[in-house]
Length: 354
Image (cartoon, rainbow, N blue to C red; front, side, top):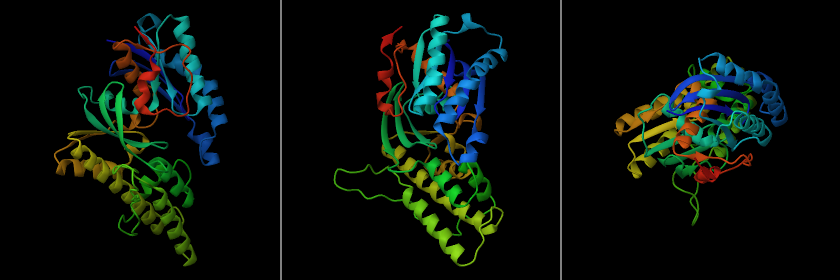
């Protein structure tokens, strides 16, 4: 059994967790949503400063919830890529300092790999190979999970990520930030067939995109034009109005159906019978309904992490770090933060063997 203290500071959640293999012993998540909602999105400098202010408190709190101390910790994990560099550096620096002071190995973790491992927290019996549909505010990808640290991206968004599209449409409807939960709530009361919106098909130029790629820019533009048309006709799009709820429901339906179509087709084409879902948009009720229904029709298994592990959290990072450390993968204390890093390059994070 490998016990990890993990830190996640890639964006606007400061999270510290203590994880024993796939078992979460403690998981502290301190969100900055109330701060960033004023600006309509995450402000990197503010996010970094907030991480600095509360990281020590979160580390201390992680220990107060369990009967463990530093001698019981086998290693220190931290998200090192991708993400906001300033925010990542707060977590990495804290993790390296703890590793030096307590003489523990340091394990850098790729943020997207953490989202893949979120499913293991509730499904510890899950084993590769399987397909992961990773849908969040910054990423939308179909990832072939072959083994720990061995990944192949089979499809991805060509523009906005799914979560980003939700945020932008929420902004168009003047609903606030973050957009995902607000649109999901309104969609439950709206007519999902009220408006016909484009799914976001992409062209396939010679040597171009993969058939499982997706696009949300056209859908976002279609919503903008729809709103402009309705306002010109004299409709007042208030959050509580039925027409706003119908737009939200129609938009969510289009996103959910498009993602489901690609995920199911990809799994069938590659002979994978399990689809694990990760990222903040994995909490979306429309996506959960469509994927569960389509998977059942095609004799596939679809796995959703608990809602608390869909958004950014250190428990998923600790789970990934524990698996790497158990295999002898250790990161150098010279490892830095990276705003961008392809998930296929995960093993570059480990320059030493235990």
